[in-house]
Image 1 (spheres, rainbow, N blue to C red):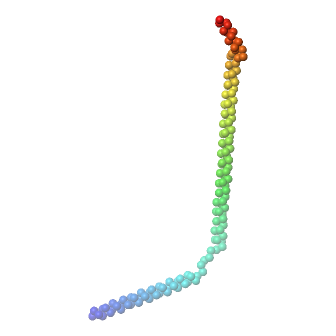
Image 2 (cartoon, rainbow, N blue to C red):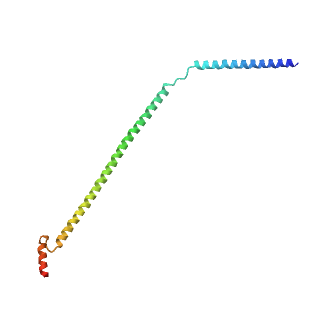
Image 3 (tube, one colour):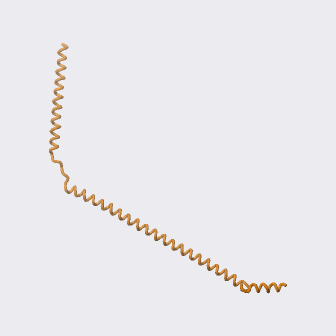
Length: 139
């Protein structure tokens, strides 16, 4: 009796194996059929309209980047010129202040010399004679 059970299990296993084999065959043929259908099917080509919009967008963005670069360079150059102009104005203002300060110093020196000349009793050329006279008066 044991032997008949072993045969029954073997038959069942063979039946299951046959069913699994058949299912795998069907699955394989279905996958191959699906692949052939997809491969043979025409792929949707990009339309001219979509392609033209993509190209136009690319060109537009390129133009924006180029214009931004050029305007940045122009602004930088303008900014540098303005800084140079401000520096030149400050240098000129500083030179005027120095000239005015120097002129006032020269005027003060001249006034001091005039004051010393006016404050003398005798001119500097006559000073030796004035000293002789003052020496003779004291004696």
